[in-house]
Image (tube, rainbow, N blue to C red; front, side, top):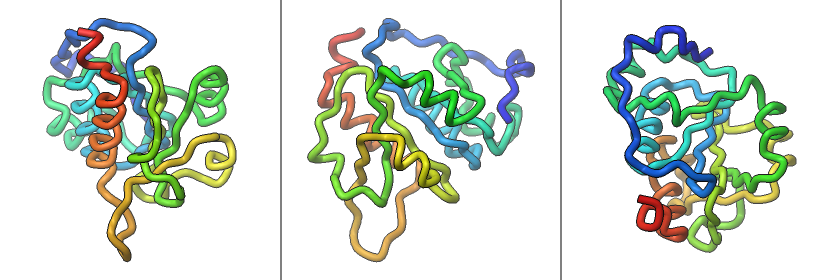
Length: 175
């Protein structure tokens, strides 16, 4: 579970991007590898995306493996946590949530991203449960060569977030 009580141990980096409802959101479903989550937090910080974490999380923000990777890029104002997937989906009723999954038939290359999209990624160890697959309307994947299971989660986030920003021109129109 993520605890922000120890936030004073972090050097907080402040974002330079303007805050608005159009920024992309990266949602992590019950992440369990601190280094991946830290790398994703760093990517979000550098590219102006919000990071949303759906609990339970398999580590604390005080975990030394997390701190080693996130360095001084952690900006708690850019992170939102949800206590459960139910709370997350209740909060997203008016938002478009796109699930990244190896089980999708549509490639992200053929998908039209919009400003304010929430890009949902599953756990490194097991993805998301079937109930989440049934809840979302949009499922896309990153094409890979045959007989490979999946890319690293942080790499996947970087690929998809970059394509979202390229299509929506978020970084170039919101600085």
